[in-house]
Amino acid sequence: MDYRYLGRTGLKVSELCLGTMSFGARTDEETAHRMLDRFVEAGGTFIDTADVYSAGVSEEILGRWLERQSRDDLVIATKAYGDMGPGPNEGGGGRKHLLSAVEASLRRLRTDYIDLYQTHVFDDATPLEETLSTLDGLVRSGKVRFLGASNYAGWQLQKAIDLARQHGWEPFSCLQPLYNLLDREAEWDLVPVSRNEGVGIIPWSPLRGGWLTGRYRREMEAPPAGSRVDADPDAGGWPEAWQTYANARTWDVIDALVEIGEKIGRTPAQVALRWVMQRPGVTAPIIGARTPEQLEDNLATADSPLSDDHMEQLTTISDRPMPYPFGLLTRFRRR
Image (cartoon, rainbow, N blue to C red):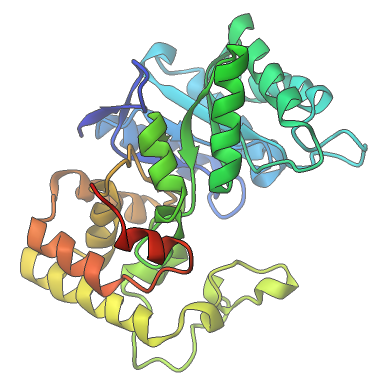
């Protein structure tokens, strides 16, 4: 597995990041530890979690595994924001919550420091200066090495970068957005801001909850009962619902993944994941494997680069008209 710098920092991470959202939920601790061992054996060093994953259990499972590892060989990322209790200050990006959240994550992870600490979502109720100055203090204290953001809009990311620059605070070094062949909205604002400002991109859901694995095909009239895409997002289900993605564009993309995969001897999931890995600005997509078998399939992506022709084929077939003003501005682009 190759290694890439995280944005403009001197921190190198593996080109695949192992996401642990399923740990403690659909993946038990024994299986999770086997998957972590296999990921490291394959050269992986970059592992992502969050305090809200299984209400902290994901961090605890990772922490018990981490105690047996060489800590400095690994890059551990976690996130804070989500409501972790009934109290009025047990969520959000305010100073009180962030200071307690980082201590709780450190205890669950059984480590003295967090390599990458990320805000899980933009907090429109808290002054951004409060969030950023608090995060800067965590870096200065040595409890956190680098900072990142997830689920920000383009203007929110740019404002955070500008405020950090203005005040001399530690800037965001990476962004964790939704980005895959079916969800390319990040290219409108977030990717240009990140590339211009030297922010590394670590996409979540690069396979869109199984849509890009080839499991769902054009001839199907409905998803398998009980699957993620069978859940109603309006009733608290997963956002990759059948009614959202079962359309002609999705089937065209999946057909292309299958076609390319058959030509190069790879699974549709490996082709889809490799497309994300090779997109401009991307440091490391986050693979959300919940079983050892899924992990093995994902790991095979590391040595399976796509040709320029195959990248162009997938980029073209998954493209769609950009809304105003993005579409208009591309007509006047000079470089």
